[in-house]
Length: 184
Image 1 (cartoon, rainbow, N blue to C red):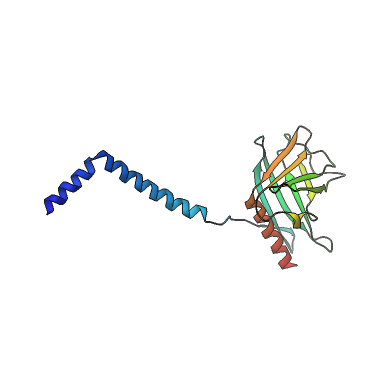
Image 2: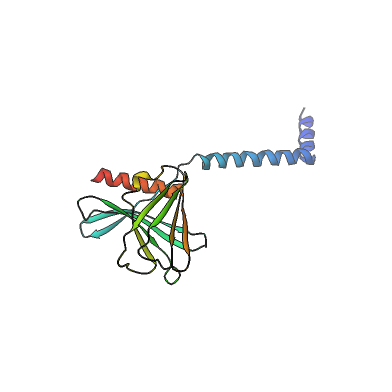
């Protein structure tokens, strides 16, 4: 009996087709296991805090995204509570010396459902730097989709900016606005 088992094991490991099938089966098991762990995982969103003044803590959502030309942009959504009602602003910051905004210029937002929204330029008169654009997002936040992505478009001095906002960032923005609503 023992000799039969040893012969069977010897045949299995010396038959190339069986070895290939076994390796393929093991690889498929690993791929399926890893794939099922990553597909079902929720997107992680990170809200950041900063001190606006000594006793005032503010939340914001900040991400670094690349445009279609490969330039990196800092995309920052933040609330402004300086007035009686909370306003939300989207700030876009490009690399100095490479990108310059044209003010005043509205930001166009295209949803993955094909809806076009417009955010007004908050720096109509003066911007802190040529590579910084800021837009009033308060009127359009409720119109943003809960799923999908966005495409932001605005003319720059050198070319037009086209920036894709992925669904994970949209989720982060929704968490930010929910957090602010709970605190107000």
